[in-house]
Image (cartoon, rainbow, N blue to C red; front, side, top):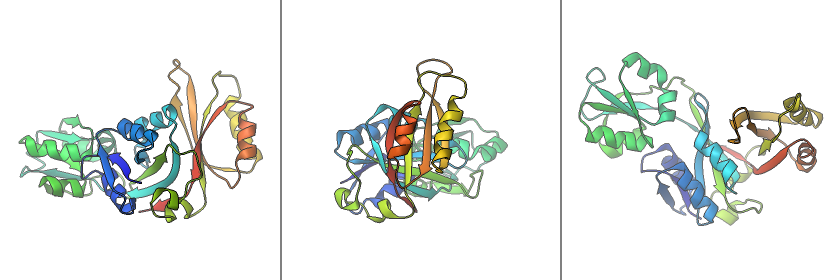
Length: 275
């Protein structure tokens, strides 16, 4: 099955989708929401960034996991290197920088030192195209997008952290057990390493000791949490849901215990790959 990802050509999502598509094809879409819509329709799998080691969670992806019926069937960790690129303009002569909000956050120190205004874009590839079309501008972009747009790299590796990693997840509308044979992507994507599971815990009504009770369920089952992140429930100020990732072989007892405390949405159990 083909993989839908955030485009246009040259984004990090596009690069990764090509690597893991297994020859099934890649569909590039303008927004992460459109990727979720495509995956939920069952026409394609979806590849979306969910968190970065420096900038944190990707809000549009977390919202998509809350709002749709998509489940996670694999995760990928990709080293991200950002560059400042232009069409013949030096960093000192640049009047404006085009950057995706996540890329801006991941390169904030470099950009702040330059003291140049930033205009946010829909993707790193869009940043490169805008820098090409507007004289006196630069783009924070990938090496691939810079090459496609014909831009020159004037400052390489401008990310805040040398070990800048983005975690991507592969999503599907299928509620069945994932397998490479089912989806036409490499089998290793689902079986490499220990399985991780993801859930959304929605307390619905806040009360004293609530988070303590939720974490106590994991402690009681001797289960290691790899991530916990709060996100507004959109029911009102101060109301949150919790995105929780954990390592486990069997989740039925855990989920049953959690459901006595709060509403639980299961997002899937899956394997990990580093690319």
